[in-house]
Image 1 (cartoon, helix red, strand yellow):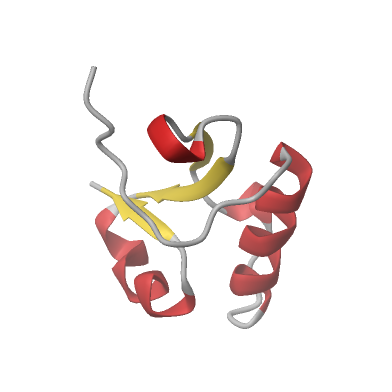
Image 2 (cartoon, one colour):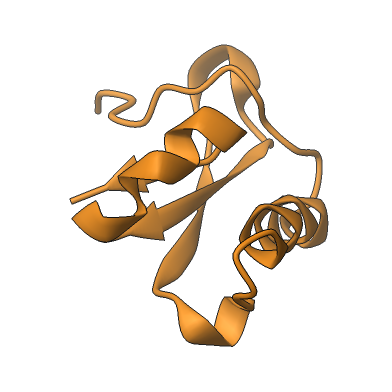
Length: 71
């Protein structure tokens, strides 16, 4: 299976990944309850690490804040 999500920053726990995402959203006055997101589990060299991922093209600007965005 291929690692489809590639990112430089991963987090050691799901909670830390959610905190990072919440902090990025806070700048726009949004919360985790306002968006569609998932916490992806990294594989390969980063196995056991987690990545916050926003779901939706409208969130593309968040890539500049270190958040992965899909579709």
